[in-house]
Image: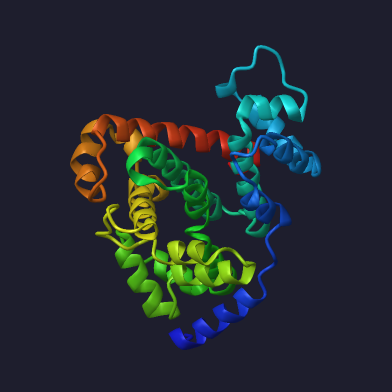
Length: 295
């Protein structure tokens, strides 16, 4: 059995060998959402890749969009989804090209990552006046926060199986097991991956620290984002465990008893609003996964 030091060495080599992220991610992250030409720029990026075009068309024609007649052009799809919705779909698809979810475990992890991303965005919008955070950055952090577990699967599958077969039921226990068995937590791994990809340093710090608890949103913007991603992760965490119902199924009473005490200090939300956000996020992710071919 490999020691934690040996596993850590292998993981470091694996991170060095990671493929670069598709260029579209960097292009999307540098676009100004307030620019009058933002729609045109997103349209250009989508039309440049037939696979992106196909996914955006599929999402625009999904049941929730309820188009009266089939949407057959990328321009009409963007008008239906909105530039931000299309941009987030492309971002998710681009990352999934690097970490292709093939097994049920990987697809479940992807659904969870997307659920955290969408929940983050909705929570930031809900508290827009108090949080002063960027909803698109929140989506990106949520999407990337568990990428380190994909790296573990690729380079240390036996160690990952040992971790997941151990009776852990909290993120804190998961981190303890990862450090004990692999010498690195999945947060540290994804921070190293973000550095490898040339992403902003703030993104790397946020994903590394996403399991920190007790962070108040009254602190600086980095701590505010950490507090929100930690909470969003907890809010959809049960749905990531096989056979466990999520809070969308458990209902408002469970949200009130389990989640409201965990809301970051300085952020106010009712149990009803939180349940609505979780339920709508999970429904949105189900359609996004269908559009991405992740079932």
